[in-house]
Length: 575
DNA sequence: GCCGTTTTCGGCCCGACTGTTTTCAGTCG
Image (cartoon, rainbow, N blue to C red):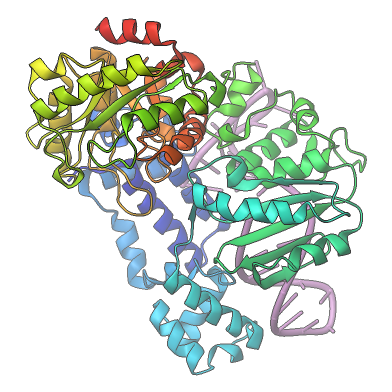
C-alpha cells in the first residue's frame, strides 16, 4: 500500500492533536503541525525519498526525530508512538477540536470529568445539561457546543470558491450602500483564490465603527451574530457560511489587509522575518523594537518593503517559497486571464453539451476568444452519448463548415478520448490523426490501485496522437478524491513526451491542482487552461483555472493557449 | 521537537474576543 505525503501529514497532525490534549509541551505540538504542513506542501514523493535514502531533514521543519518517524510511517504504514498515545487518549477526541469553542484544554476536561470520547458522547452530555457545570464552561459554552454539534452534523466545513462568490458579491453590494464605509475588500482564502474557502473575511475602512458594524449585522442573509467586538465582528449567514468583518479606523489598512489575507503560515513567516530584523509585525504595521510609531502600515507594498521584500501576489501567499523568491527579486510574472486567447476543451449537443457547435463558437467569440476547440466525448463515455469513429468524422465535417461560416474566431477540430482500463485509447489512430487537438482523459475505473492506475495513464501517454492529458487527477472537489496516482511519474512522462497537462477550469475540478502546476513548471512541462464547458455560460469559468495556475506560480509562457492559433497548431504538430 | 550570517541552548508570532472570572485562561484566526 503506497504511502502518500498526505497520509504522512495526517498521522503527524493526529500526533499533534493527541499530544496537545494530553498536555504536551506546546512547542513540541507545534513542531508536529509545522512538519505536517511542510510534508503536504512539497510535491516530491516522500515515500520515494525514503526508498532512495534521501536526507529527510532537508525538508523544512523536519528534524532527526520526525524524520525517523516519517521513515517508520513509510515503511510500516503506521507509527508505533501514535498507537501508544491512542491507548492513553481516545483517538476520537481530536474530532472535538473541530468544534468552535473547544480546544485541547476543554477536550481534556470533558474526557476526564464526563468520560466523553466521541462526538456522540458529547451530544448526550449536552442533552443531559452536564457540560454547563464543568469548571470554566457554563451555560453559554454549553449552548454554543450544542449549535456547533448541529452544524458539524449537517454541513461541509468549507465552501467551493465559485459558490462563495455567489454569497460574497451580494454582501459586497450591500456593504457598499453603507455611507460610513470608505473602502471594502474581501481578504482571506477568498482573496488568495483558493479552490475552497473556510469563511469570508471582509475588511472595511472607516471611522464610524458602530454604524459600519450595525450595517453589517443587519444584512438580510445574516442568521446569527457570533461575536461582536470593538474592531471585529463575526456572523453566520443563512447559507451556513461564516463571515468575519474587521473595521480599520486609522492608517493601517495595508497592515490589516496583509494580516487578514493570510495565509496563516505566510503571516508567521513574515513575523519571524520581522523579528530577525529587530522589527515587530502585527495587523497595525511594522514597528521598530520598542517603538509605537510604525515604519510601514498604509499599503501592502509598504509593509513588504519594510521587510526588504517585493510585494507578493495573494495567490502565492502559502509559505511555499514565495518569501525567499521575493527576497531575491525572483518572483514569477504571473499569468492573467487576459493572456489566454482560446479555450480548447468543450462539449456540444453532439454528446452531453447543451449548445451546438455554432452557439459555442459565437459565445466564445463574444467572450473575446480568438479560437476554440470542440472536443466531444468518445463512445466509451456512454452516459454522455460518446461518439464512435464515424460519428466523430461527421462532427469534424460539421466543425469545418461552422468554421468557414463564422468569422472572427477559429474553430479547431478536437475530441476528448477516453483512456480505457488497459491504457489504450477509445478511438482508432487513423481517426485521431484527423484531429487538431486530441485530449485524452480517464472517466472510468477511477479507483484502481496506484501502480495499475499510473501504468494505465503512462501507457496512454505513449500514443503519439495524444496532445493533452485531461483533468489528470480526476478529483471532484468535496465529492471524489484524486485517483491513486503517482503524479510525479506522470509529470516526468509529460516532460519526456512533450505532452500538455490540462488545468481543467471547472470549479469542481481545478485539476491539475496548484502544487502539481508548480512541480510541472519546474520540470519544464507545458499546461493548458480550459473550461470543459458543457454550455455557453460555463465558458466564463476560465478565470477559476487562471486562479489555480497563479497559485501554481505559472507565467504566460507555461500555458499553451496564450499562443495565437497558428503558433499553437505549429506547437501541437511538432511533436 | 525544530532551529541557528550574533546561537548547538534557549528561544519558539501576535492580538482580539468570550465567558467565567474578580484579573485571566482558553480559543481563534
